[in-house]
Image 1 (cartoon, rainbow, N blue to C red):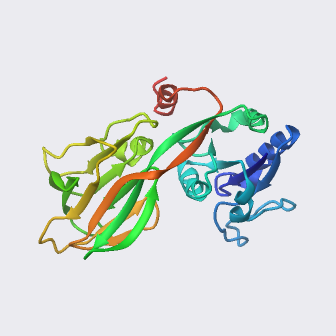
Image 2: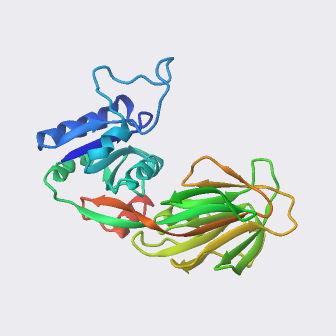
Image 3: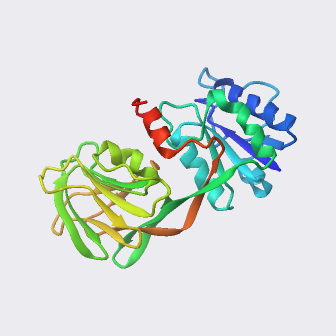
Length: 289
């Protein structure tokens, strides 16, 4: 089996973790390729990659890969998942960041990667969201979210007046800094920081959490996965908002636009190696163990 290793070079300095993983996997009989998850600026003291390391194209190497292994934080895993999902390739994360809720392994557990070569691993499917912006009957933006879709005010803007709907029935209207619409996987990210509930990542729900709401009645909701969630600036608003999907580049949302989120047919396949439960990981990451 071919296994693609994708290290974030700003987290995996000198690609040391990726090279260690490569040795472990090739000794176990796997074919490997190291590919950076994004283009980097070399030289000038900003980033120097080790000489002699052959780097492939992620797009080309994923064409016949069995597993994608990411090295970094949750942002690296999210970025890689978008590339892998289009090809139905399962993803395994190695945490080199600060928290890493989505990572299956920590840096000190690289030896467990040998199980990939022998097929001794499980697959956990994670729900995703289809996110789009509708403007005057046209779709002007679309993307897929493994974690969340976040509607926020601009850096210097005042608070937003938002309306949130489920299947076009109003759930809530409030004034605040924005709203997080998340999957269960994303419930431990921005949604949790905004006061939303922690939901098991294999569940099927849509979570909505207001950000810094200026209202006592604006509370998080956990919705059935079959709902279609709509978010718009309140009628008559002259402000603009910004939409970011899985932490990606912000898209400007105008008055009258509808941000629509619904369960996607796509799922993300996460590799399971350790047997650790979600509750063990939560306690470990949140420092309660």
